[in-house]
Length: 149
Image (cartoon, rainbow, N blue to C red; front, side, top):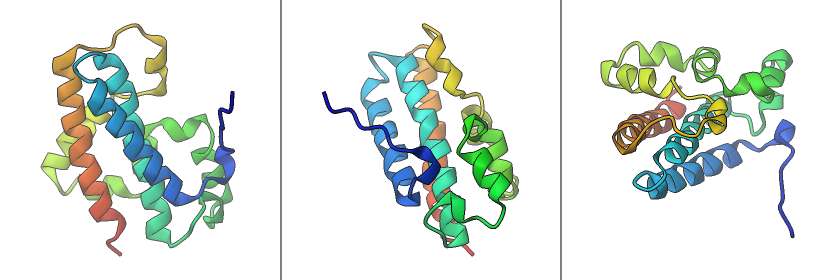
């Protein structure tokens, strides 16, 4: 069996974007049958996109190229899964405050945690649909925000 797990300490920024999009597509596929799995996977889009956007806005290819090496270390550790912390360190939080629709979407998405993998159920189809709608809003918004200087 050939399962490849990358070294996340040296992940290229484009990989964050691609992985986030892949997890989102998987979540869309699962939402009606396995809503908790869909919620769990969809949250990774926000995490991955914020890391990708941070690289885009800083015109770097790897988080390790950030001038703040402690920040890069935090973002590639378990602390890098905290969406509220990611929002703050990427300065996306300042943008979110200016857009009520995005702010509402982020409040929903910020309830996500990789610890959802340890629960049998974190919601039903209604919650999955609502969560994925919030993630879709953030997906579109982060893409735009990443390319604004």
